[in-house]
Image 1 (cartoon, rainbow, N blue to C red):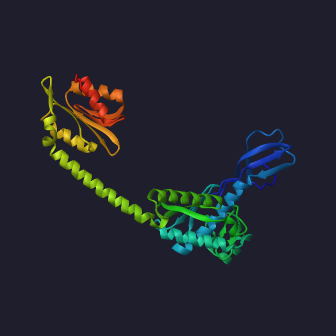
Image 2 (cartoon, protein in one colour):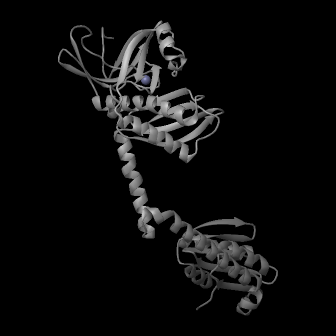
Image 3 (cartoon, rainbow, N blue to C red):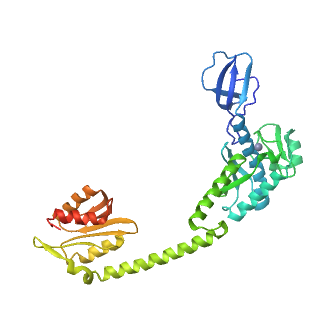
Length: 373
Ligand SMILES: [Zn+2]
């Protein structure tokens, strides 16, 4: 506890400052600052050897600047949201961290992309206009008379004297947090998105200053990466990816039709491949269809053939499905253990994905059953 301090204690949704305190030439890291009643408590990383005398405090200025930018941006965005959405918009809560911030507003439904962009554009215009931000202490009655009850955006303030933060011609609020003296110092504002947190309360997430620039660079990279895949300019990306998506769905439907044809005509296609071993009929075959179709095929054949193993290499995956007696299933499981696989098993059925080429399973099972070729 110090007689006076530049460290801002956690409050009003804003995180506390951090930094260094030097007592008698010895440095201590300030890890947290908070208020207990009217007393500001500085939490240090270790117990100081002396607790009185002259003390020097050094703020982590980068962190403070980021917090001031996010805090000041909150007021600017609040003013912008009221102008875009209507006077029913009030601030319901806020959080300001160095890396990002959010503002909760009273509004009946989540915001559209256009509404968000309107608020963002307006907020950035106010930044660029470089409006001065005045801080003054006023009595409650004077402040209410001059600015109205809209000053209570952060909730009711108990004291008789209010600290009024006035962004000239834009937003006036009673607030105890840290702010910048001019809007231009906020830097660019990017609204990341909005969501409904409960009935009548919408949360706007945003970044200002350095994190906003980082966000824009990262968004550009995502766009660049996506454009590189399709080899198009950004303005063509939506159209091109839609065209690819529609084409992909069409081809998938065609493929499914083809697989449907195979499973419907499977008797004619492979029944001549059925052999007999120890009085049981056996089918070991590769048919390149998806797993769903493989399962349909084996269930179609189950009354005609005792033991069936079908493998497939389809859409980049090696899959298999088998049906048969206990002895046959055991042999397949031995082979799977050798090759590596993820599979599911029901009483007489086993199917899944192989970690090896699908032909390897056929070869291995053939060998275990005593085939020489
Ligand atoms: Zn404030």
